[in-house]
Image (cartoon, rainbow, N blue to C red; front, side):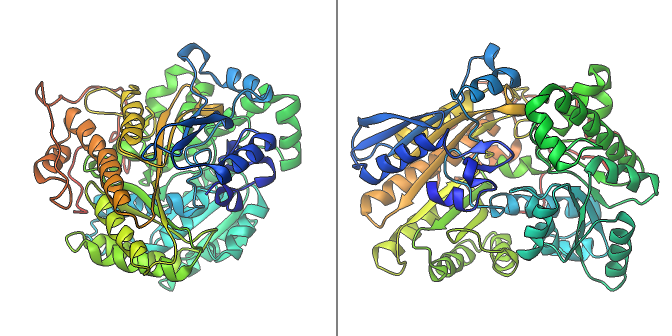
Length: 568
């Protein structure tokens, strides 16, 4: 998995996996030492990693994690971008992204399922789609977005799966061409007029074209608004969280940007935030014109407020975050971005795993629909892998069934299970995963830390605790898990314990915060009825806390954050 994240990464020569700065190891000396330690590691010992460099190997016992990793966890007064850049330049730390430093990244597919779930929820919420018929409601509609990096490149593929046309802006022509070559785009153009003409022609014939436009997002979004063109959906998935390394300012070419961000980083950050603010203003204008507009988890609004000042916060935050506005009802049930990797490298094993997932949960037919679409639309990257949104009880049921297939030789090799760090219990981020929590716990980091402790206690194979770096410094805490189904009976016990602890804590977290979906999940013993939880409710359910963020104040934006999701 350590080698796999580099194989599918954006800049493996610099150990960068995605998001401009997310790294698999601190430096190449550390990377080589990690590889040597992993190859020699005995099951009764644990490799200890500190911010991407190996510390040592400690005797822990055969059921303890093989790897524990802590990345860039710093005291509050040190959690600033400036301090992070200083320490990273001095070789003292790195940013592990979410899944880069924990070796859990599987390429664009890691967030592709989440983008699919998000767009499907929007189809049901705003366009009247019935569950399973989202493509009917999205026919003839289009989304305007930007970013074709490791995660952003999932956007046009997810849109195509739902019959939604897309216009995706990317400043780096090479990234756009890579995505086209992988089948994620139908064509790449360099002129907005040509892009819109091609889009219109495709919509007239009933198609869902995926068009890439090489350009600057701030320029293009503003021009779309000026022309009076109103997309049905507007968002962004550039690496705007990092104003120094993640967002090309208006008027810059790539060479100038790469040069100045090392020679004059403060200027680059200032210019990037100015451009981000321009893009956000255009998004607000498009929302006022009727588009459904949201931020897709990259601190775009935070950067805009940094430039415009706190007086503009209320206006900027009329744009809701995707989790608060759309996906929290799923997280409250422990449903989130689960993933598995066929360590054999065999697509035959992947096919068997897909078949199992599609058949195992008849009460949730959306799982089988997703598997069918993923088989058709998702390009292969690295080891054969799949991301699938499974919930409390479902993940462990699937993993134990896979362990049986490894044991009887049906599968050619062990299978690794993991998930995104943005999961029900595993992340605190007041502008992504925990924005607008009903009990006001947006910034409390207790649950990801508890999650890491429980995962270690229940026998996961790798447990990681990450904090933010770069533009995310001071904004996030997360926990990551990997556990391998190797066919042994004892492994089945660890799989059930660890995966149920992980999702169960997420359900309890949301029950404590007052989400009715979570209380129902506790009462029902999860999605399968076979994952009981004990909720020690010591106080009445929390009343919603005023967060200062409006999610429904202008046309097309947001919606009720506690409305039960229709995707049951």
